[in-house]
Amino acid sequence: PARMVDTGWGRVSLCSPMRILIVGNGGREHALAWKIRQSPLVTDVYCAPGNAGIAEIADCVPIDASSIVEVADFAQTIKADLTVVGPELPMVLGIGDEFVRRGLTIFCPSRGAAEIEGSKAFAREFMTRHKIPSPRYEVCSSLEDALKFVGKAPLGFPFVVKADGLAAGKGTVVVEDQAEARAVVEQIMGDKKFGSAGAKVVMEEFLEGEEVSFLVFSDGSRVVPMASVQDHKRALDGDKGPNTGGMGTVSPTTNISLEGHKRIMQEIVVPTVAGLAAEGRRFQGVLFAGLMMTESGPKVLEFNARFGDPETQVIMARMRSDVVPILDQCATGSLGETRIEWAKEPAVCVVLASRGYPGTPETGSTIEGLDSLKEWSDVVVYHAATKREDGQVKTVGGRVLGVTALGANPTQMTWADAQPAFASGAVDGQENPMSIFTAAKLQNVGQKTREMLESIPGT
Ligand code: AMP
Ligand code: GLY
Image (cartoon, rainbow, N blue to C red):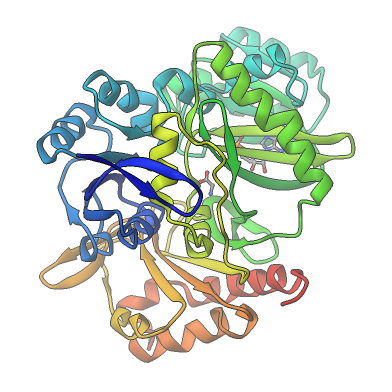
């Protein structure tokens, strides 16, 4: 039954006690489950399909996140009051529309709105229509056109080649010369490396500046910004090594000034949400803008239609407000004057990955030493690619754990300190399963993270 709840920033109508279903199986979804679990409005948390960490705080069901009809059937069966979707694939497949058709409440943009992430060509053309600051670009719809573009190279070198559709973060390549550009285009459009996601490519001007992430909650017309956050994408320290889905995050960051924040809201976020609504693509969910702060102001590199991973790990660690009313208000189009309260303390997340990541990761190893970390206050270990088997936690993919700390002085409680904790329980040589977490990587990312942290004034 619906009831009115005073959340501290206004009364909202909620079904209580609430039953919430989370869709996905990564660190992002573990962080969401962890935060949602703390809400006094919630009694039951389910996750499809979840992982070993999520299974400790929620009921996991073995339904793949992309099986959107099965997920909707399950939500109906358990009478979920709210479903929260993490990954992009079910969004782009239309899980939002499937739920709405059935009268189920879901925190997830519609398929039309999610196209802002699902098609880079759509996104760029949309930004042109709504005068949202972007790099110069051209969309090529055939191999022939793309090769012609490369021959003329009107944007100079380097420029950026992007596969139109979802390519698990691997569809973007900065090309330095004609030979490389031709090779990349041949792979995407000729060899169909990403299948139909490469039926079109977007050629973009290479932007220079500082890269920032900007995430907001949107109910389709109103937006509420989240705490600032910075992702560390390269696999190794010193911004070296291949790009990954994200090896670590820190919040807050100092790379957006107050003026920058204002410009991003005015020139990018607000017109994007308004433009989508005007085109019949009301955006309800998380709009996550990847931006380049150029000499002439912020410009959009890309939009995601979802929470970031591992951005969500630090954002949830710092969120003091109850997240459930916010999710519910976005889903029902009733965000109102919501203000989110954030912990003053910074949070840091460092991802531990299997050897081989971001290429083919080694999997099937046992993770030990997790219990000793549970005793730490202000440190949460979010699971990503883990699975419980025969009473043990095993690795099943690339990014495995996100060690997340919140503290007034996190420089004293981060990775240099986390490492012995792991070591005490786990890392003691090549034969030990924990050695799959390349210790060098942990240390290196820790160093980078410490540098980021030291740049935050007052810490
Ligand atoms: P995307 O797949 O659009 O998220 O791009 C992945 C990464 O490529 C971004 O995080 C940037 O570092 C880089 N990138 C994408 N587009 C551009 C651009 N137009 N200019 C410079 N770097 C870019
Ligand atoms: N960490 C970047 C992303 O979630 O896309």
